[in-house]
Image 1 (cartoon, rainbow, N blue to C red):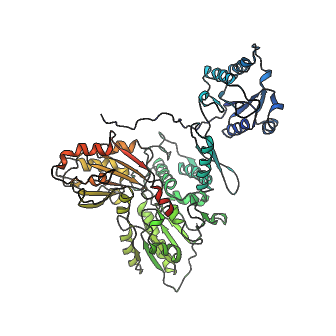
Image 2: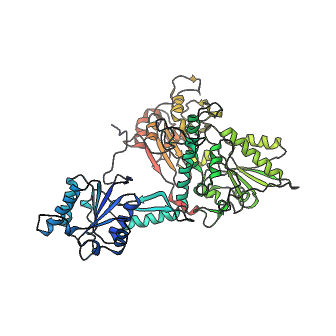
Image 3: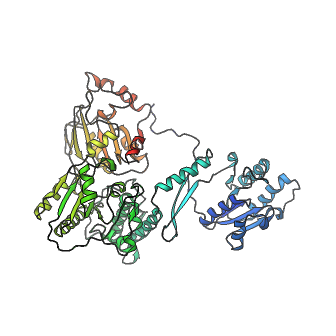
Length: 614
């Protein structure tokens, strides 16, 4: 029987982050490693007890200083009451008595077993201490003796504000599960170096934004069943919501605003989140316009740097609107599927040499925005669920206003299921004929990056493109099944259950489908963040794709779907016999060769060969 879910591979750790306020961490040993463990525990709001042979005078300088400043306590292990006379038993018995008489000790770390030290604790002694801890159900970590450990420490980094040096709640950690601590530290440094220095400030601002979203006229809106947590509920921030209206309740209003917090967290550049002022936050949640170009303070106008830009910067400066005799221009450019190397030369030139104002979609990655020179204003469309039409109108008005003042406006918006068409008509109606610059469409690029041809001799003779999201969230009619045709559905991953219902509904004609139903075993691929380093592709069949998506972790918008037999045509040795006579009789074996004994397959990440094109 085929496995419904991935089989667990033993040997990993269950990665948790503990809240240790009012709890105690007991550290055995007083060397520099003990000081490091103590500092980490203190940052986690824990009380710390250092237990060492010789007490305060035997401790390293840092621990002595912290004890003198009442940050922790140092106890002399030799002075604890104990009846045993044998040296190997005495420490374990004394520590056991301390654990029994002290309330609140939740973790024990043994650091004086560190290899290479002159007074290293013996393995037999460490084993007895470890047994004393486990007898009392207290997890223990023993340095350099992984088989005695209940938990291990990750190589971690806590972000700080680059201007004030204030600590941030944002932390990252990595572990090699005892198979290469130095390698884990190196990888941690590599990861940190590739992240914006002000990522911690972004986390602080998102916390403020969430608090604002929950408030109304200064009062906190009561949370009902966790609905006002932007991390709760579905694994995608693009779940459909109704258009906002003036009659919604205070709680409905707060719930909608929390959806917008999720959108901002998912899509906006980290540097922009880090630089948000209080006024910017209020504007984000106002629900009528996008993030204003004018920033409230001189500090807010500081140039923002992207780690992918290799020195290039972009900034959010206020647009000075002054009457001008020069007639402005509006460029509508295709920004490609996401990877900056896939911008056309014309689009790159418009962004880097001609633009005075850039109007960007929220899906445009920071690596593309980083190409824009300093001093050029960037406005990101805040087309949050339930607010898209209002934000679109404000964006078009901003373009007209700037163009009337002689500015060159560059607007990135695709013509395939984008807003380019209505923008052309709107700008033309206001006296500006936009210059349209086509780009690389995700319709073709997305499947190509996933190893899927939309047409393939012997597997797919044609393809059709449709959207999974109708205007104002309405359902759309989808084409019926043809074995020789590939169906590409842009957007709509958040509506996957409804789309599957439409594709599978029996009958030649339904109210939402033109043509025959799709067989349940039809191959499908969900492609998320196509062409980006964190691209993910989920392969399955219509029968199992929903289960695959729900069990693959958080979704990574934007996403698209490819349905049809071309999905498997280039896998491994390939299969271009799909359209042969009597080929349908071999479909079960064909699917088994493709998916093996599983119901789905997930490919995570972009081919490393694309790194050189960043």
